[in-house]
Image 1: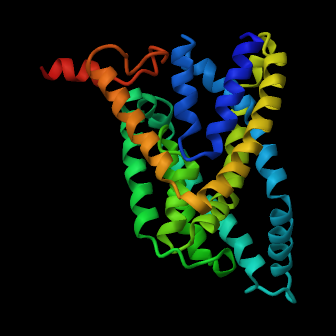
Image 2: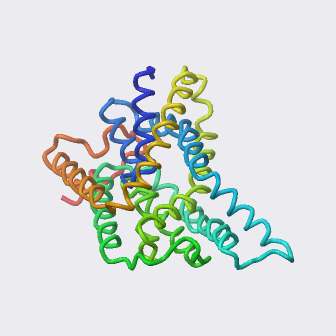
Image 3: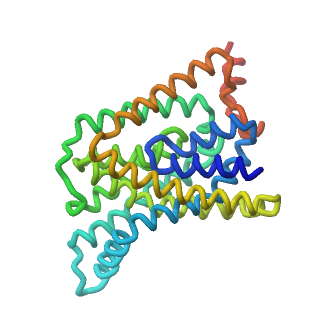
Amino acid sequence: MGIGEAILLGIVQGLTEYLPVSSDAHVRLTMVALKMSDTNGAAYTAMIHFGTILAVLLYFWKDIATYFSGWAKSLGSKGNKNSPEARMGWAIVCGTIPVVIAALVLKKPVESTFRSITYIACAFIGMGIVMFLMDKFGRKNRKTDSVTILDGLIIGAWQIFALVPGMSRSGSTIAGAESRGYDRENAAKISFLIAIPTIIGAGLFEAYHSRHELGHGLLMPVIVGNIVSFIVGYGAIAFLMQFIRKHGVGVFVLYRVVLGIALLILISTGKLDPNAGADQDDAPKASSSSGQAR
């Protein structure tokens, strides 16, 4: 991998990790465009997750410190277990549980079947519609100081959708927060906060399993990719927090639906292989199964 490709993937990772458009799907499509293996792309982006992790920790570090302090104090006998800070801390902790369980149960299809571009295209459209409905009909009258542990569990459970590339972790959790009545800005904020442990855990887990790739001339591209993904990721968070408050998610919904439809058209006309870039062993067996059915 050259430095130019490392910069491109760093931009894609940083930009799409936090915008509600799915980083996994965009990295997958970028690897297809570059004619690179999906496995190699997944391994590389796992190792540049640290840039985007640092970006979200730095952007929300005051909130993280406040909520962690409130949560830690609630563990003691004299701590205020019902303070907004303590409740947010517990919401973040509990919000991580559903997606961890789902990731373990769905590990095989997540790593193979769900990475088909057909699934990605449908996920773009499906979650786009859900985001539109939640943004349109959500009550939008709650702030983060009203958070409950139940909110954490429900919004955290929406992260399960993000196991399918194309769904988007931020898109899913923003929609989940709006379904609980949070206004747009606070929905985005609680979405990021609840997703932090999952992002860190997934990044560390994938990077550990891809660590041997560093010996294949990837050290410099990984360093460059992390720097780029940090800068772009921080900017993407700052942009989204301002943009969503004033304009909602409409532009992202339109982008997702148009891209999803375009991908389905390309697949149906034979101009795009839905399993392009996938290793033969990991490619979904849908095409062979349909052939047998015919």
